[in-house]
Image (tube, rainbow, N blue to C red; front, side, top):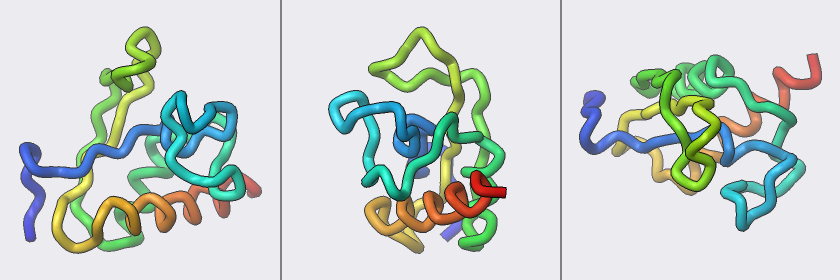
Length: 98
């Protein structure tokens, strides 16, 4: 399936931020989260998974509308979002420790 902006999965850095609570938008356990997740590394995770993606740098997470940290939109279809997020998180954790 090719990338389609209208049906793409939106991946926010807030999903991977260890400083946020689940209520604040963190989607994964803390062992899969990092401090200040980077859009480029999230995009690298999508690339490693062989998914088409697009980076939007001037977007804001809805519950954190004042901070425009951006997001990455990933093609939908190959991997469900519940499986996609931990796989991207593994790439973030590996790159955070370097």
